[in-house]
Image (tube, rainbow, N blue to C red; front, side, top):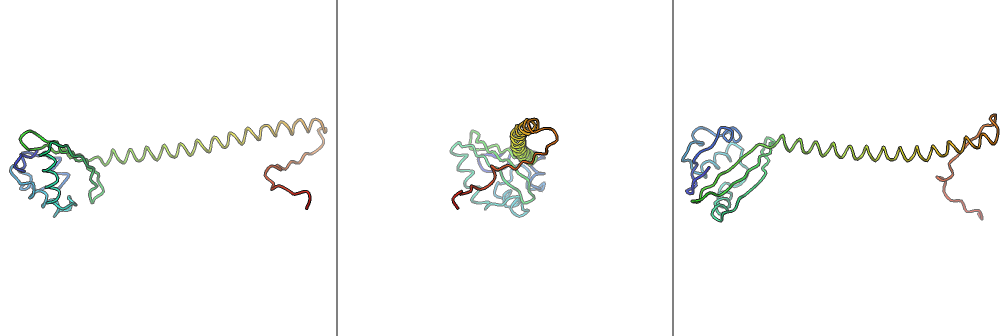
Length: 166
C-alpha cells in the first residue's frame, strides 16, 4: 500500500518474498522509485522504473485500476492489480499465479487431446459401421454361393475412375 506521496505504507511478507526485497527497501516510508530501482537491480522488475512509476501514478490520480500479468525472469507469472484510494494513494495486490496458469494450460491441452481422441473414435465407429454392412453382404453372398466357396472382395470405391474408351 502506497500513500499519495508515493511512499510505502505497508507490505506483507509474501510481497517481500516474491520480489526478494531487503528489509531496508520494504520498510514503511520507502519511496516507490527506490523500491523499483532495487527490484530492477535484483532482476525482479523488467521495465524502466521511471516510466512505470509515471504511468502508475497517473492512473491512480485519474482513479483508474490497473491490472497486468507479469512474467518474471525465473518463469513465474505474477498478477498485479493496483487500486486507487482516496487521497491519491493506492493498494497494490501482487499474487503469484504460476500454478493457476499452469493448471489452465494443462486443462486446455487435456481438452485438446480429448477432442482429438473423440475424432479418432468417431472415425473408427464410422469405419466399423461401414465395414459391418459389408460383412453382412459377404455373409449373404456366401449363403447364396454355398458355404464351400471362397469370396474375395476388393473395395472399388477407393480406385481411381477408369475411362472405358481408352
